[in-house]
Image 1 (cartoon, rainbow, N blue to C red):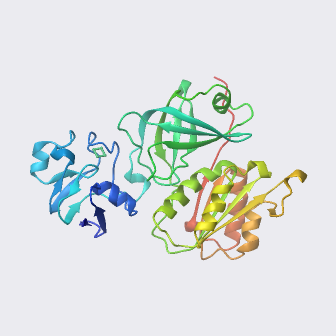
Image 2 (image 1 turned 45 degrees about the vertical axis):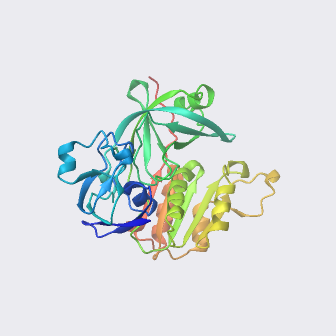
Image 3 (image 1 turned 90 degrees about the horizontal axis):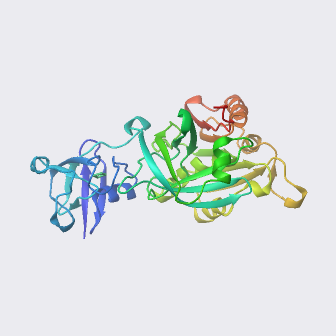
Length: 341
Ligand code: FES
């Protein structure tokens, strides 16, 4: 048994399966509704039921919904299950301004070695807290002395039980040195986020070119996993530029996406392949590989993420090749060394 839900303010419609919450069903079908705890305790997901009826697990009103609110039709959509077709009013998250950054503690659940100089952190926020974000956004780790270090979220928003961060070791970088030499599983960190306007514009009809340098792969991964999850069918060609073969950490992932999705293409590009790499693929600067394949960029949306010199060179070259600046989205990672305290 499934029910139809119509969002009155946007006229969007979606289906909720038996036992599924209204929020889970909306997220599954690519509609982003506001949420935080997903446990009925924060009230962020509150909206109004204007037609139809909802029930709650064990028929118990969740803690963040008062009797008075329920009496006037308010509901918590992270907990509410439809008992009929519904018409609801709720604010849809359409842009970065719709999400208020928050400060949260987190625990390092797991650490993976992805490459000789890249570590992956899996972070768990406490109790019922979940971080809502758009695919491509970043968080700031809050460090002693009011210092911050920004890292993109690499997991897609629908898969938010743990937050995924890719950290590249920077010579003399204090925070990355700490991550590589001292940080252990179960360590506690604090962050603020999400931030940034580098997120996937889902309303555009244009084909997409994506380009990453090094760990600039992280936000692109979040965007792509979000796009695949929601059956996004615009053509996407992703170029990943790194120095040598060993820098293509998680190399099997984009290859797997290319095999699984007809509309997705992947081109790795090595700038300095080692003779031992036995590399038959593309070489040189990654943006030059993009331009060799797409000399006219006037019809494309372009997303790029990586170190500032790569972004600067690509931006200049892409605009010369017809890219409309309104269709260029980028995130320049700064691998800056911390100043002395
Ligand atoms: Fe917190 Fe629903 S997301 S109460």
